[in-house]
Length: 123
Image (cartoon, rainbow, N blue to C red):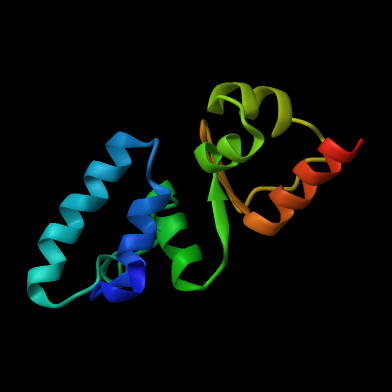
């Protein structure tokens, strides 16, 4: 689906932002500003000095080709509400280390989360 768009990385970041309405709105506004100029919002964002923000971490992972899940996406995989997932699953000491974590915003490698959840279900 995203390959048909002129800036597939921007579409991928927007997809990962589902469940984060404020961040999604901010990134969508950046897309609206950059696309008419023929520029990717991901590329524009990553050319700026690092900020340590969630959107930047998502953009970096997407740019680097890392298959990721956000806390909202991981919670959906675990069939739990995001808050419960973060408190009861992601807080466990044996849960994979996030690539990024600040408050309720987190990013993990997709394969690591899937392997952990599969092991939980097999136990």
